[in-house]
Length: 363
Image (cartoon, rainbow, N blue to C red; front, side):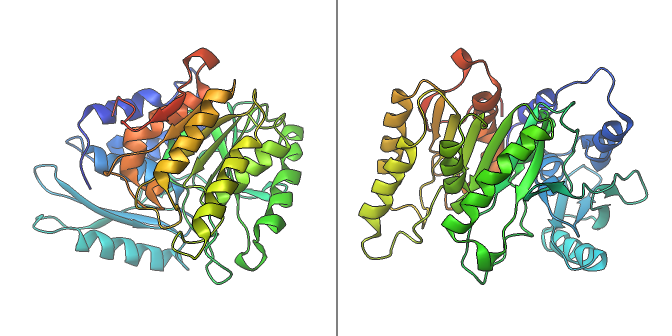
């Protein structure tokens, strides 16, 4: 992983909203996932963000292992969705050991699920609202304290690939730090065709308002991003903004006759959004096996952004972040999450718009 300069670590701290009187649960949560939990001297941005952002998106059972030498250099490994706490710990330690290289240090278990080994822990968030369940290791403030709620939808890999134990991407953790509660729209792979899961997503949105959430974000990867845009088109009065990373619904781009259908359907997908609401962020990647033509899709999305009143952003990172799963990479969060935060939170006049390929600054 390419390391980001030290100011990015300051960015992570500055982006976390300060509360005059945090609740005991939030104070404990902050202590667990703080940079100080990794020891002194201050760790690298990659180590701090791996624990403070990427690991928090894991599903239980999860574990994080860390090794640091006398000079403060680090190696680490983490896993989520393991069948047992013991399996999670063993896998995290094994990954940490493989990453040691020439580092003269021993891997130790730092965290299990949402707790430090031998230190504070907070309960995993359980239950949910309607068809949505809480992201278990992210902080849940509740509708009265939170800025709003994000519903995250995973991708679709066919009826034999189960994504319900996959992690939310690191930029979702950064949204959580900025006051957004996070729900997951997890679907059984055998019952996850687009037109079977879309009605469940759309029908579940009113329950979020009934629970007291004033602002609702929809986000998703691949099929999850595509159906999030569709749901927002159906119920724009309920959705504040949509974040769609590598949106797709046509399978691999190499399939015969996929190019024309995928591009035309993408154009119609964007055309279905009303002009004034919701805000929209579309993230595209070079080297995406499910994107028939990133350049053409970027042009279509940029043209639609110019037509809409609502802030509409097209992120198309350069070659440092590539592939269908680029949005799940930590370096995407460190380089581009600032734009996503601005898109969903900034006043309308200050929100980013149009096509952007360069990193968003501060990291």
